Length: 218
Image (cartoon, rainbow, N blue to C red; front, side, top):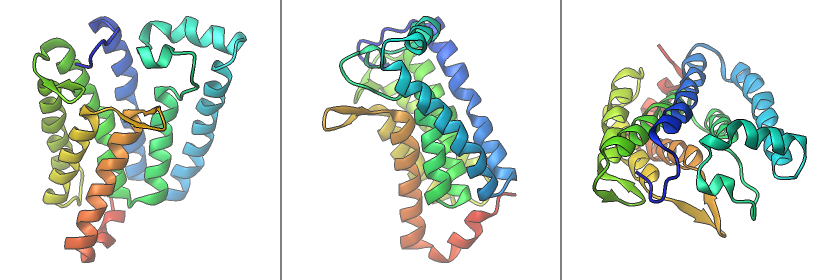
C-alpha cells in the first residue's frame, strides 16, 4: 500500500475496475494488425490527452473532471502546482508506445501486467499490506509478481524465462516511484515500458532467432 494513500478500499476498487477494463486493449490487439491497432489507439490517446490538457486550467472541463472523478484521484493527481497526465491518458500512451516500438507478444504481455497485475497489487496492498517494499507493500508486490507469472503462462509464444524477467522488472517498477526533473512518472507508463524493455533485451541477447515469432499471437 502506498504511503499516505488517500483512497479508501471502496474507491480503490472503483478505480481499479476501470483500470482492469483496459485489458481489452491487449485482448483486441492479439486479434488485429499493428496498423489497425494504431488507427484505434491514436485517436483514443489524443482524446484523453485533450481532456488532460484542459483539466489543468479553470473552466467547464476542469469542473466536470474534478466533480466526476475527484473521489478516485490520488494526492499527486490533485496537486494543482504542476500539470500532469491522468491514468487513462498514461495507459493509452503506454499502449501506443508498446505497439509502436515492441513486437506484438512483448507488448501484449507487458500491457497485461499493468492492467491485471497492477490491479492485484493495489487491492492486495490496500487490504493486506503490512510490510514496506519500496513505496508500496511486500504483500502487494507479491500479488503483482504472482499474477504476472499467470499472465506469462497464458500469453502465447512468450519465452518462459523472458516472461519471468518481465514479471520481476514490472514488480520493481510498480513498487517504486520514479521522477524526472521533479515530475512523477505514472506507473501506467513505467511498469509496461520497463517490463517490455527487459523482455526485448532478453530476446536480443539470448534468443534473437525467436524474435520473429513474437509477431504471432495464437
